[in-house]
Image 1 (cartoon, each protein chain N blue to C red):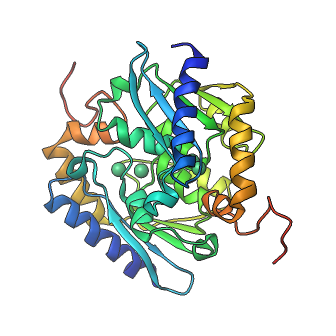
Image 2: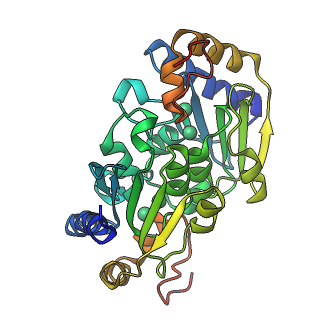
Length: 158
Length: 158
Ligand SMILES: [Ca+2]
Ligand SMILES: [Ca+2]
Ligand SMILES: [Zn+2]
Ligand SMILES: [Zn+2]
């Protein structure tokens, strides 16, 4: 699958998340042969669930698969993967991680490369704009999602 | 909380998983003040869910928490954490990871230490015996759970 098409699926998921009032991060897992194995978006707010980020939600929705299904697969994600999602991609041997943008948050890209995973950053303005809008509206939810206490994206002081 | 008591909670969870026919790995997350924030066990078989390992299941069951709740916390797990669970502990800033055993599987212990997390391995025969029994019974489920295709714990050749 073309990377722009793969990312477009992830962006669709992120937009669904935004419409649900959640953290607008989405992901899609595409097999080596181009089939869509799964799609998903962050469900922290919707389900009160701290482990359902875009990528993990996508892996959950893909269901229980033999390890061969992940061989040569690509994880498309609208935002640079956090440590948990980085580790989830490593566990299942995802071959490539294609990132919408990494300006809002820079996750485990270096570690993925160190472990032999190809990382591509597409610098998508659409992904960045969606996060900018969300963080301006709900900075405290965003900080909770990335495991930090300070409202680094707001001007508030504790 | 005493480390033996914390591990005992994780072992209780692992045993529940075994009784359910699942991968017998359990975890418990204990706050800095000794309160139990959550407990959980691997749910791959029970829910057909590839992201619910012991530690992530425990984090899910603990629910949505402010990041301060994880400060100084200890994750007790019956088996050395895989890459995903290693990353989940890093994301939320778990301070210590106490491992029942790492002979069946050696996960991200070195990376956790590198990132400043204290790692303690208790070398529990009870944890190891439970995994030995499970792997002898269901080697293919175990390999699927750790993302490998070959039945490394069986004598079968593909
Ligand atoms: Ca997220
Ligand atoms: Ca597991
Ligand atoms: Zn994540
Ligand atoms: Zn794990």
